[in-house]
Image 1 (cartoon, rainbow, N blue to C red):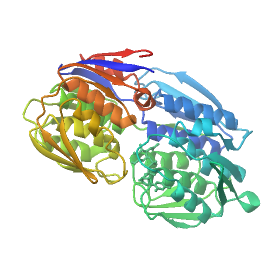
Image 2: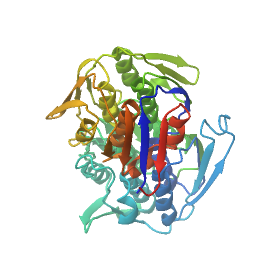
Image 3: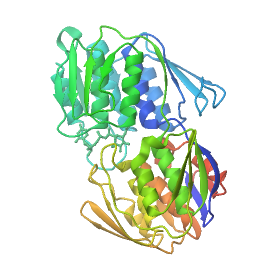
Image 4: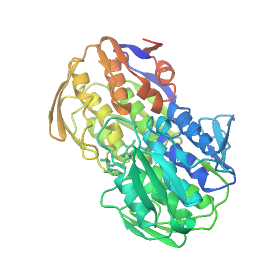
Length: 432
Ligand code: UD1
């Protein structure tokens, strides 16, 4: 298994191009199942999760062509990569355990398969070990659209009498990003209208809703907590850009801050994570928006700031672990409260290995800084925890080895290269 070695203590300076958002690209790829015509996605990230989703869709019968275009051109987006998915023939409605266990987003094929084919058999998902992460709300919502669902032997068996889902009013008892996405895709190809209340408002949901509209669906209320979907008999092909990755943006903004450096983040949008930039500003980090991104710079004298993770537009849970690493270098106390997942402090014991003073009380962690951090061997436990350990390693004096980094490759593209270009002394140890 690969590891990453870092010699920390270097202020990072330079430029990083932000990739397309993993969490937007994955449901957009699943949406290709809704039509027999080609769906072209531009500004695609290159990540293990994207390959896993490609493999999943291929075994359902989709054809996938990838091409490299000139990065930065209007045709290509900042990443320069596009992908065309054509699901003209669905040859198999089973999403097997071996693929869905690697990545929770594999479960996104359930709604589209059911809506297009009238049946689906999808393994219960895996993904990061950050809580129980049920799929009961996905299933509840699809049942309200007329699906008959049974769960046995680790699989969800779903079918609908007459082969067509029917629009309905669905109120989620809890905000769920994936649940909203699965239901949106199913409702786009259902008979009649669906009203979705307490829908998630994440930018990735808006990206999906815009894509469905480009495919001929009628989704309104985009960006709000109530979405209206007028279902269509068929949908057609489209060409859609993946939004910039706000979690990658936030992670590298914190890399600039934690090393007291200055990084120009290109190809991103500050509006995608205002809550995070507000917290950074309050902590004393300088944030300067540019035409296509933001410049993040910090000197000593950062202050501890409290944050609470919340559904969008609140502070994202996917940046909570990285924020904790940053707060270890700030003066004073910072209380970090996690409200989305019940088991998302697994980075705490690992951060302590750098000399960070952090205590957990229920759903809150208190960090008391500034810590004099020193490098240490640490173990990555989930995707975003991995990046907080990378940040810790960048800030700590001496050598850090982050072990078990396979989660990192699921969500961060060429991380060593991007940080290395800003002066970080960082390398991958293959097969460590
Ligand atoms: C998505 C993101 C993930 C992010 C999370 C919250 C993708 C691929 N992943 O995950 O990076 O951390 O949103 O912003 O986009 N829940 C249930 N039952 C359900 C569904 C969810 O109890 O059927 C619970 C979950 O356990 C969790 C909470 O609801 O406690 C929110 O989960 P949800 O918004 O669904 O997260 P994901 O879509 O899995």
